[in-house]
Length: 158
Length: 68
Image 1 (cartoon, rainbow over the protein chains, first blue to last red):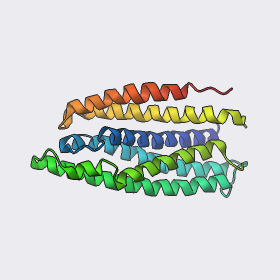
Image 2 (cartoon, each protein chain N blue to C red):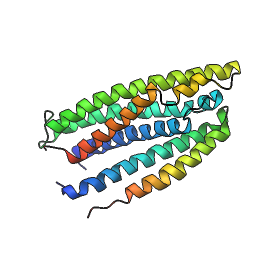
Image 3 (cartoon, chains in turn cyan, brown):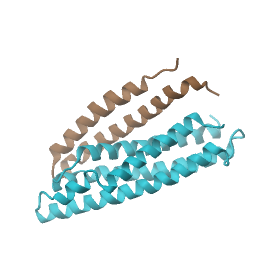
Image 4 (spheres, rainbow over the protein chains, first blue to last red):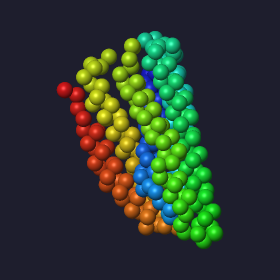
C-alpha cells in the first residue's frame, strides 16, 4: 500500500467515525423523544460522551487527511469546486453539530442535577428532548453530513 | 475512475457501513454502561433495539446494494 492509500484509508475511517457518531446521537434523540424522565436521560450520558469522542476523531481526521490527500494527489487540487464545497459544508456541519451538542448537553446536565436532587420528572426536559432548537440543529447536521458524502462520491466537476 | 452507475450503490454501501458502526457503538456503550447508571434496563433495551432495528435491518440492507 502506498502512502496515498493509507491517507485515503484514514480519511474514510474518520468519515465512518463521524457518521457513526451522528447515528449514535440520532439513536439517543429517538430513544429520549419528549422524555421528561430525568434518571433515564442522565443514564444515557455515557452514550453522549462516546459520541463526542467519535465526533472529535471524525471531524479532525476527515479535514486533516482529506486536505493532505487533495495536496498529495495530482488529479485533485484544493481549489476544485467540489473540494471547496466539502470544506464549506464541513464548517457548516461543525457549527450546527456544536449547537446541537450544546443544547443536548445542557439538557443532560439538568437531568443529572434533577436526579441528584431526587426529582424524577420535568416538563423542561421533555421540551429539550422534543422538537427543540437542539433537535433542529441535529437534523441540519445530518443533512449537511449527507450532502458531504454525496459530494465526496459524485465529485461534481472533477 | 469508476462508472457513474456505481455512485448510488456506493453511497448506500458507505452509509450502511457507517450506520452499522454507529449502531454497534451505541449498543456496546449502552451495554457496558448499563450497570453504572440509574436505569440499567433502559440501557439494555436501547442496546438491543439499536442492534435489531438499526444495525440488522438498515445497515445490512444498505450494504447489500450492488452496481448494475
